[in-house]
Length: 76
Image (tube, rainbow, N blue to C red; front, top):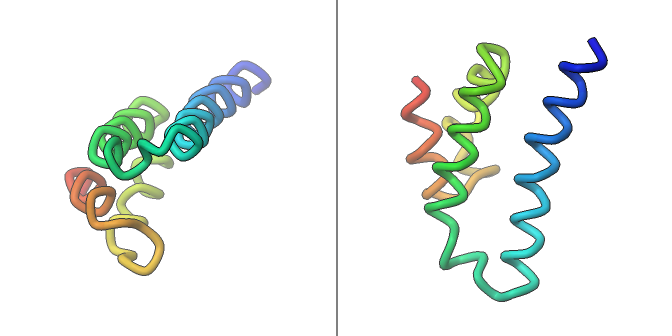
């Protein structure tokens, strides 16, 4: 259980850290499509429960930018 928890926190935490770095360096918009593809890969690697979360997010344009919705819709 601990190993799986660490795996999840490392994957999600590293993604969040990259978003913070992008924002602080002013490259958030520039890297949006790349980060969206990276998020889809992370959710896929984390397994079926996280794929379902991605599928749910892909139907919520009020929560995600269009680039993310486009990438996450590939999980459908």
